[in-house]
Image 1: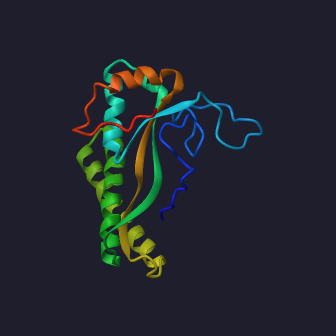
Image 2: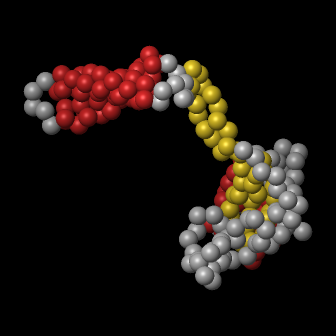
Image 3: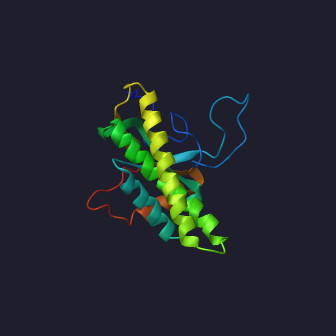
Length: 195
């Protein structure tokens, strides 16, 4: 699921506004006006836009290494896409094995907790927890798969990916950040600085 961004949505160098939230991500603030819309915060400036997260992370890490107050920055992913990678076919047997494995880990954990407080044979308590957990996990895995009625006969892993990552900073600290970033070389690629 990908959405096309309109030309007026986000522009590097635009202070606040657009579809980017103002202020660094994660900071709590009182809601603006009637409680609808983004919270009011310090105006921000986009320092650069990068095609992947490691490049944006490297910029913020570089600022942190140079004693810049990174709590005034944010990495904002735009044009988010949900990607579900199919890992394989899911049969009742495989669901049973996956359930047994999950149950065994849980049983091992419970067995260890009880084993700590056991005066007698603590290894037997741990093994009993592991076996009981594996059996119940296998039963629940098989039953859960059977209840889907063949509607989802595959396993998958979901992830969110952004098309672009913007590094923003509060406007009053932007000049200091730009001076520091002037010394950073991104493998022959310079950041798209805002004017």
